[in-house]
Length: 275
Ligand SMILES: [Fe+2]
Ligand SMILES: [Fe+2]
Image 1 (cartoon, helix red, strand yellow):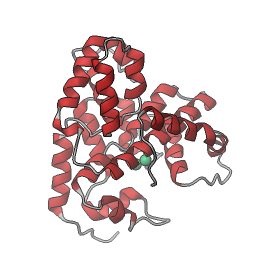
Image 2 (image 1 turned 180 degrees about the horizontal axis):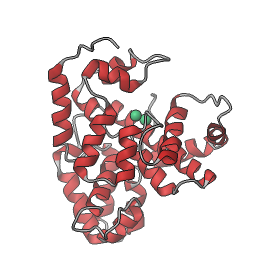
Image 3 (image 1 turned 30 degrees about the horizontal axis):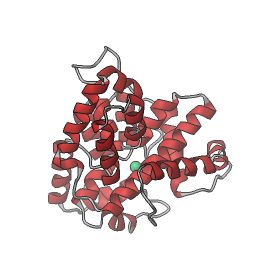
Image 4 (image 1 turned 60 degrees about the vertical axis):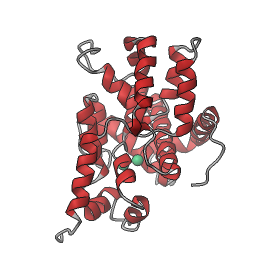
């Protein structure tokens, strides 16, 4: 492999941002919906869960809090609904309000980038959950959460690199995956940056491993889970099956996956956006 030339100051900026990141930005419509729910005395844990379950940044943060020394019950917690129950409704509302008041959640990301990130995360999460349900190999909730958070490292690239998507895509080819393009251009990739965030936030091991290894299904401790998420990730970009049974399942379920995405967009009042 040839020596890679990249701007060391960009690499350093990405690492620093990952270490400092307290909260990943959310779509404004999602924040608005959340503010409505936490200020409504009639809202339930279920109402909050339905919205939180669609947001990689806030759900990662809640999961990290539920797994912290204060709330941890002695075992890793992957289930977001259970995390909310363990923390308790009033405390959940207080925590979310604090998170929303933090500057980072509004972020400096363009709506276009944030929407693209959100749409991809929801699509992959819904696909991975369906695959886990059909194959009975993995817990659907863990599959959903792992997939929802798998690309969390991209948030740092979107916020630190102008035209990140265009620049990295220009190097992607049949043989070169996005992580290789990122390494070549910036000296690190979204798996490594995501791993720094996941470790720093204390996310459970299975999810941390997915974030770190989702572009290499040979690695990681949760091989089957990783495979389901990797297939769902690839399916988002390429709908051809090549006879792969898991992809055939996803093709059959395509309407349901798109329906779920549409439902979430309606719930959040996202009218439409061409990608
Ligand atoms: Fe990725
Ligand atoms: Fe992805």
